Image (cartoon, rainbow, N blue to C red; front, side, top):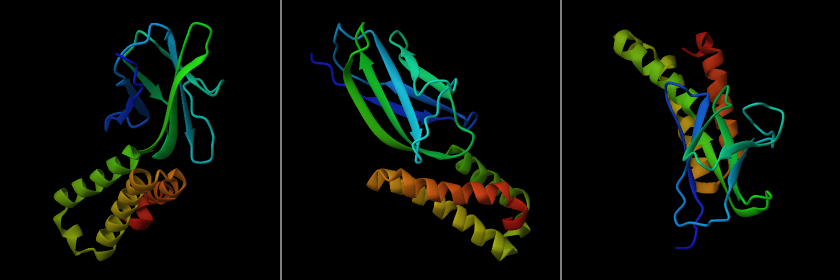
Length: 171
């Protein structure tokens, strides 16, 4: 069976700084000996585990790799290259992702506050700002899912980060 390259990306609510890439490729190619991962933000800055090179090496023996590279919600372009023994690219896949777990965690924290302090419902600015936060999260996700637009997604995520950083002003 021919090799069909693909990968998936996920984040955990418990560790939003970490993204997990899982190789979901099918088929086989005996020439493949390694993979490398390039993660760049909407400004083109590479995000790596050690910060010294533009990529992270993904050991061929590992089905997945955890990259602890985020400090806030980030829209990113992620490329995986499958290489042979002399580091020639045999296959490559690039896709855009909205890594919004920090913003989602903050939104959930705010919902917990609603459950614990029921009279917050009376605070229209709280609800209005919560709606703005959620709209920006959904806007970021839609920008990537519908248009592969990480720039628009990052603008939405920046508004989420602003609201979280200055939550006393908004909530």
